[in-house]
Image (tube, rainbow, N blue to C red; front, side, top):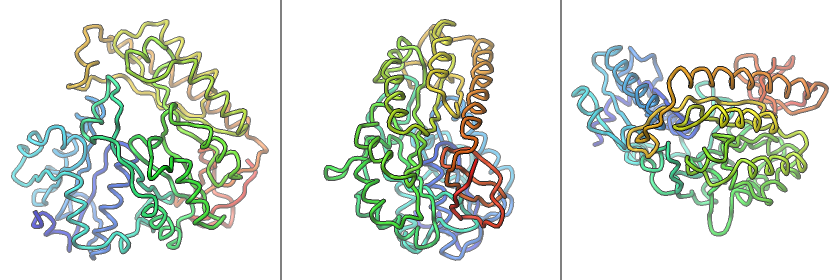
Length: 400
């Protein structure tokens, strides 16, 4: 297996697809290779190409196959390593594309890098990486939403040891990281020796200086407990007052058919509780339109819930059949033109709600993280122009 990485000493390119966890893993692959003296180059110049795949929907699967074919066409000599969720579900499809393709499970690929260089010697900090540094603290999922196959690709939920996470974060902070984003496939399920996600965050706050802030990535509604709400409210912005809470649908009937473990009113009550504790909270979400059997009434209920919750950003997904899931077998699939129409309407609502949220913050003071492209990310996850006389990586106070 080690011969797969023969090109590491020369030039590489990483193609990332999918979620924030994939982004962290892809950045980690790149950091390990850079620490060995390899160079990150355009696709056509690489001797090693790593494609970190996604399989969350049928559309994601199509994009993954397309990405591997593009890599093979763009470069007629590179070794192409295909890893990630799509490769875990259907390895033969990718292995059959070319004799230059090697399908390697993600855990095995990571261990190959570990044999070559220690994680502490390969930091995802610097010009090649995002200013906000992601740290994977959890993987896998014990849920089984009827539209999703990630729990099959990733396996059962597991959590990294808390001391290992604290050590990694302290090392990243020592290298200059000022915002750390905690990521996981089901982040809110984090558990280590009695410590929940709130316990992990409490330890991280105590282990790092006040100049460092933390951001919680996507967390399931059922996993937002009083301990997390209270810690966020008391952190004075060190835990960004922003949460990504996936709604998926505002119709309780559709949520039940998705096997989501809550009803619409539970979600609305949770949001009300969050806003009472953290008045300046920003909330983003994921919503699927056109799930099998979704009616116009179901869709309008989703729009109502979105307005009630005042989301600052809505990621709109048109339902895409993923073979191997219960929803893909249903005979009441929604017509493509209906899905397109609903997506367009919800995107318009999302744009209005985002503008309303930003306008409501006018005159408020938030800490912003200066990015590398002349922009800055506010605590509430809006993008603004970087304040004058700041440098990438700075966290500064700003009047919006």
